[in-house]
Image (cartoon, rainbow, N blue to C red):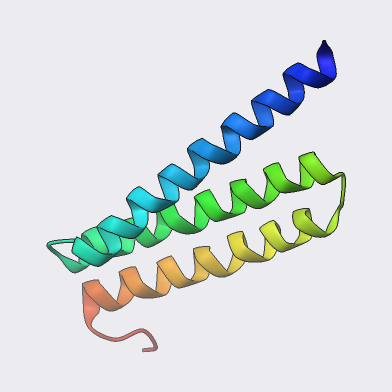
Length: 93
């Protein structure tokens, strides 16, 4: 019962995360402003990291957790750089 419940919950989480990534990708492509696109990219990398964590839970491999950590770090830096670029027009002062 417990393994079946966990397997079903992981499958539902994967489906919902893929749907969330599809919605974020749609906003990246169709965003009316650049700020909307940056926010959608932020949501996209967070959902990708969560999807990798769920894959790691399902497979029991630690490699997915390391990849999720790298995506989170690079995504944060990219979001900060894009936000600074939109505010000031340059990234490096």
